[in-house]
Length: 137
Figure 1 (cartoon, rainbow, N blue to C red):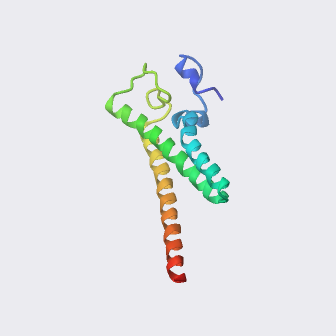
Figure 2: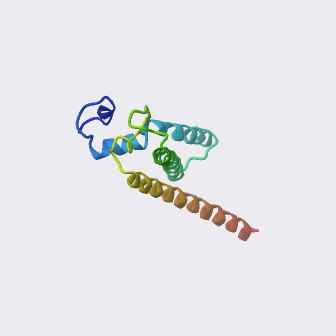
Figure 3: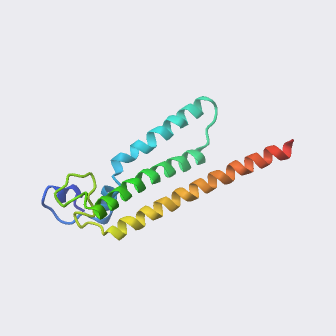
C-alpha cells in the first residue's frame, strides 16, 4: 500500500483504501478531539470518578465529531470551488480523485448518526438518573 501523501508529491500509485480514508478524516487532527476528553478523564479520576465505558463513549463521540467536521469541510470546499487540484490542503481527497463527493458525504452522515446515538444514549442515562432520584424521594 502506498502512502496517500505520494499523490500530493506528484507521483506514486493510488494509495490503499485505508490510507485514503485516514487522510480524508485527517487522523492527526483527531488529537484535538481526544485531548479535552482525556483532560476531563484525568480530572474525574482525580476526584474518584472513573468509568471506562463512559470514557470510551466520550472519546468515540468526540473523534467522530472531529472526523465528520473534517469530511464535511472537504465536501463543501469542493462544492463551492474553494479547493482546486493544486490547493495545499490537509486532505484534498475529493480534489485528487481519491474519493467521490458522495463517498465523503456518506461517511460524514454515518459519523454524525453515530454522534446522534451517543447523544441519545447520554440523554437516556440522564433521564434514568433523574427518574431514579425522584423515585427515592
